[in-house]
Length: 65
Image (spheres, rainbow, N blue to C red):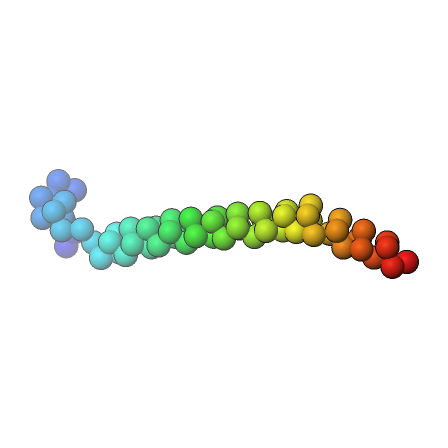
């Protein structure tokens, strides 16, 4: 037998799938935040390497050639 839509016990007792879905969304939010920060870190590191170390390396190789 199905419960009616206006049943108060249904409104007060959330379904386990709703609870699990909410936890999944929170975990996904945290995962996305960590992935964004890690991507920013590697992006800044790669930019520093490309604009600072690579020209010095090219100049050093040019001296020995």
